[in-house]
Image 1 (cartoon, rainbow over the protein chains, first blue to last red):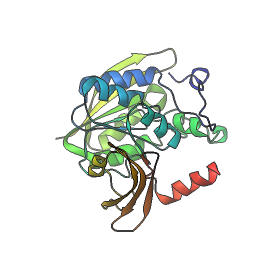
Image 2: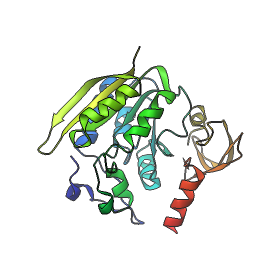
Image 3: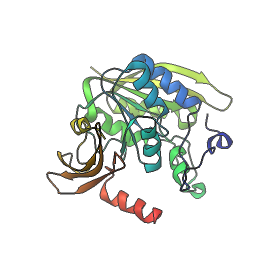
Image 4: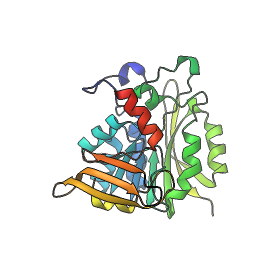
Length: 195
Length: 67
């Protein structure tokens, strides 16, 4: 869950904030520890907590990327190999066996966007799917032939609408883990290329 | 960044190979340096061990915001 009170718990020295692990991170980590194999990329790694756990507990090589340089620094501080990047843009074709993504997913009224790093970590634009769409469009490119994608989806983001995007991008899905909270249900989808 | 990161990164604009120039390294990692696209010659900085591979317009936007 993304409760604002619980999230803005920590300020970087120079002001901007980095999204700290919450229930959604825990769920993604749970799915990733079970499923991840080979070379792993975590997109939007934030604090690096999920990437660090995959590297430590599975002994895999994990790259963590984030648009927010403060997040990349925090992730690097945890020992994660960090890159500042816009989604999947600077990654090579077929480079990763596992790609994990806990996207900014809260639907946000454009009039209410507050435009700082925490807003970017949370807001999925008006639909909540503004980053999920370009991610799904491009993830097949960076994925190795037997690769798998783990995508966290909230019911707030429109579960069916995300499934339609998954279908359109040429992936089959199954639910890896799912948990209900008072205001939303979180699912981690495991995506594989449709054969 | 570790030198082995070169196996998985490319230019965000045209997906071409990058060329690594190292200014400072320790035993394990490159701490300062640049990555230059072998096609479009765009230069991406490596600072404090982290490569910034944002497309140049996004990077400039952020540098302005930080200034």
